[in-house]
Length: 146
Image (tube, rainbow, N blue to C red; front, side, top):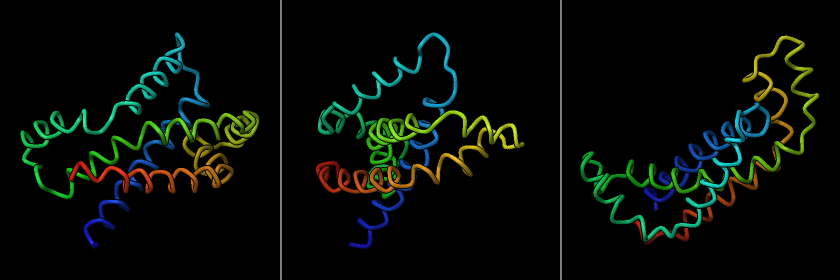
């Protein structure tokens, strides 16, 4: 039970932290050549792949790095599998925020990360909570990987 709680908590925290910053970047920053649309399409493709289709490649990769049968291996796998959904979900919440909030924060002296941390992140709190719940639920349904 303790191992499951550790793996679930750490992988959820990592996937939410990295995925939220990625969603903010895709939503509020200008990306040339519509690369954001291409990236979001690839994230959806990655999310559609069944975890069992990745079991053998993950085994060989983790075995070559000496991470076979470790908690770190599970944390890395669950983080990688949760990030596409987290990015998709959080991007929808960041898209709903008016751009004028970020622009006003930058005029007042905030950096882009400061605007993210002080303005955007508190406003998407409900979306963050929903993403955490979904990330924890997905971790529980993919017990075939360990």
